[in-house]
Amino acid sequence: MGTNSAEPSLYAVDDAGVPTLVGTRDSAGNISFPFQTYGSEYNGDHGADLAQVTLCGRGTIAAMATVSRDPAGAIGAPFTVASIVLEEGPMIRAVLADGSSGAQRGDTVRATTSPVGARHDSTRELRFEVVATEEVR
Amino acid sequence: MKITLADQRPVYVAGVGWHPYRKPSGSPYVQLGLTAVRQALSDAGLTWRSVDSAYTATAMLGMAASRPMLKHLGVTGIPMTQIENASASGSSAFRLACLDVAAGTSDVALAVGVDTPALVPPAATKTGIAESAASHIAPVTHFALLADEYMRTHGATPEQLAAVAVKNYSNAALNPNAQRPKAYSLDEVMAGPSVSGALTRLQCCPIGEGAAAVLVVSEDAIADWEIDRSRCVRVLASVQRSEELYGPKSFDAELTRTTTELAYEQARISPADLDLVELHDAFSIEELQYVEAMGLVGEGQAASALAEGHFSRGGSVAVNTSGGLLGSGHPIGPTGIGQIGEITTQIRGEAGARQHPGARTGMAHMVGLGAVCVATVLQGACAERG
Image 1: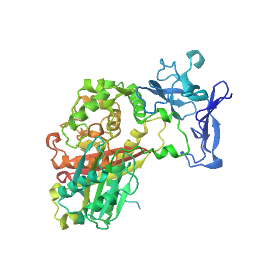
Image 2: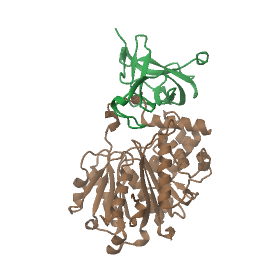
Image 3: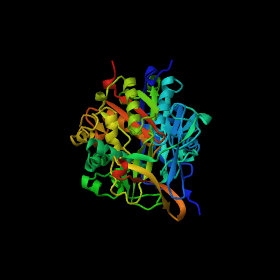
């Protein structure tokens, strides 16, 4: 049984559950997330002038919040979300992986995935986990 | 050559009216809207026959809300337009009414906001482009993240965040149109159930039903319809902008900075000239961010200025004398128009127990999903530019 991405347009997931985030690069080198061909917010490049770029999946936590009440209820509160500035520049919002209770602003994080909800099978959703200090070095 | 509102003939707010904001009751929107419009007409001393155009702000009613409501005032055939601009719907409708009168295509224009809650997914969910963790990040969590960043950057505390709500509820307690007309202590605000991050329930605005209406008039209308000039409030500036690229900075705050700078320039005033401000405090953190972005206080100084009373009634610039979105509620379509009504009432000196002494110049500010921002500057006759 293969591994599926819960959001294939945002990231692919390999059999080991490791995600690959795909962004957009315009002709001036501006990078945004996710990949799309409608047009660049920076300069209006569109279609073939936009290229897919694989992002490294690492970034820095800029802010965090623990969600205590979640109307959507898909993963069960409480959980922690973060604003993450990716190494390539874009800022995204993401859920932190279970076991990230010690995460702090300024920590380096990397993309991972987690099995989700009723589809607790081969479908995996994007998370970010803290990178150990020795790995950052 | 482009021209602004300030380059055209003067426009004034001559009448204001509300249907009180409240929890959903099942009342038809027509009943809510007509209550506000009739109150505004009475306040201005005008009849419906004098109105040349109508702009209806609504985000949740569906298509073509105006005529099924306004026909009950007597059919006149005037142009009617619906305006949807998320939380800034009412502000945008008011802006269009002002531009209509300023251009001379109307002498009397109605801006009315009316809504009853309904689940209307934002168009952003239908673009075909997914957004990371979108289903896990409700608006309150977006602002909880901004609160976390603000507290970290400026050393502010959760109690200082909650103090915004305490001030605004103290004003709402004096506002008969408010959805939450009750004062709360700091302990009560802090004790409420946490929703996301530092934000408790009482630091999140309620979304209910209601209506607000204002009548915008020209000098000709004041003369022709013998409107009481002493109760007319001049609209000095109206500016609307949309989000630009700010990197990781808070886009709502940066958009507010850009929009209000243009509004000051258009009105030929500085932030120090403002006596009162109605701003978009859907969540408590917003007020701290926006008073700084507006230049009312230096970066990182909002919480201490709030504690010192600068933003209270009687302070250097009273912020959200209506109770703001936290206290008055945020019925979406009416909200921006209700802000204009509150500032007009304050400048007239008719706000009763919640009157801010010396209110002469005020600014209304709303941001909306998208993001968009609208800023309007109003001024009473006593302080008009020579």
